[in-house]
Length: 458
Image 1: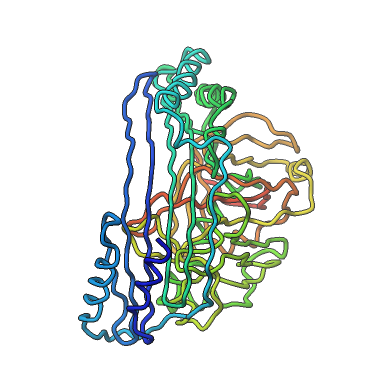
Image 2: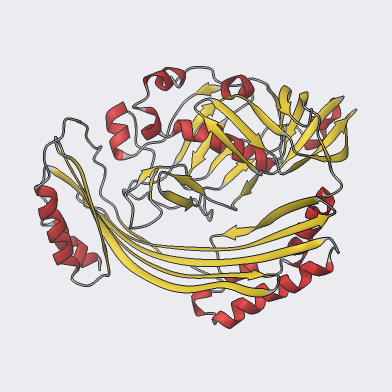
């Protein structure tokens, strides 16, 4: 296949930037609802795209299905691109080095070789355990998904890549009811691994039900101003949603007001805070040796000791803003052109123990995990999944139904302590435009915010 792509690139004019992607996706999806199979799907999809940039003409993008007659499909797309009318919008792309490389997956237990019946058996085992945990359980689901992507990428810089990307997840959902009170809780695992990643999760399946049942007894938190400790999951999602998206240069470089807010070298946070994006971390779901434009991934500091130090780029945005490439052009598949996206985004670990974060809080809230939220430029609202009161340095009663909201930059200045217990959270995915579910792990230790506005029941 690489030789076929090599021949295709000989058709390209020197003034053009051309990208060709071929992709094969083999996947399984299975949902058990209250122990019964509700949905199942095994699928194999093959296709690709041709993407062309011509100065003064902009982008041309064409996707196709199947791998038959690849050269003819590429030749046809190049011809169609040559017919594109000039555009008033003038930009360009940063040209890069040529790489010829191959990165193949090494799986302990390759899920492509496991019969579908065995996957059902594993999921059913968890489904049968969940009702044993609580009599308040009224609905449970087990969602299994595996996916293996084989990708060939070539561009007119001379890059030829062959990459394999496995992905697997198991997610448990429990709904508990007591009288008129209904609570839902969801958790699971997602990994760049084989079937071994979703085995031995009995304790997690039971924990999901137990947590949903415990929320039935949780009391709504009165609103007010609290000292707040964010757990690593919520802190990671917060920095991804509220700040990471502002760092994606395609979102930024057409917005003059936001450009001023995000001027490099400006202090935007407490000196304790450093935030980075790193697509080169070994083994994480958001990692790859190269992005989807064939640029090597790397670690990019977005904030360093409170100072805005970087942002995320594709070839086009790096050209427009005259900044370095960062390896952050990503797509969910051959049906879509790459966008500027985060990879693995995180708050860097601090030097304080977790216990010290709680020690001197007289009245506060420990906010745990993530239920939902929204952002509007620098304004944000986040709903933790649940929380606990902090009273005189001790974690006490479980609470629910509260939100954290405010101005991003004011809130980042309120960080006064960061723990040393950094962890990655790989579950879930990110949406942007029409491209949903892109793996974007988040990482963080526990983080403390002073005097933060919390919306609650009063």
